[in-house]
Image 1 (tube, rainbow, N blue to C red):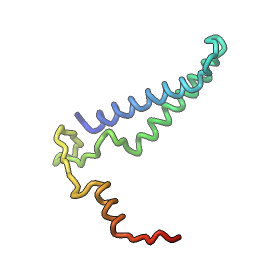
Image 2: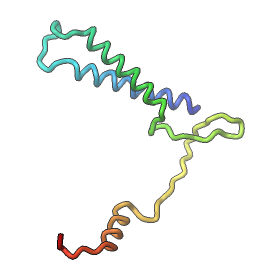
Image 3: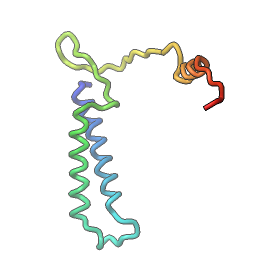
Image 4: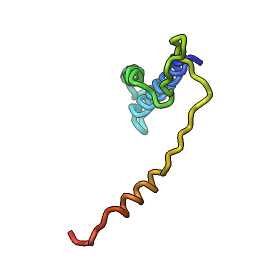
Length: 106
């Protein structure tokens, strides 16, 4: 799958979720269906979806940034390099806590 298609799919999923969440938040709990200003709800939800797409231009964590291959095309593969850190965050914090001494006085 090309990088653009993976990005587009992820961005559209985010935009649709944002649209639905915004629309749901604008419908007042306990309101009668006739009392809801649907034009305003859909307008605000559409603006939120567009904003979500524009924000996605900065990058999406679901889509890894892939350097171009020799042809200059971005190609996603199923192979992901897994790097294992030497120490977990908890182990690192434990070591740092041991390194600092506190005498109990403020």
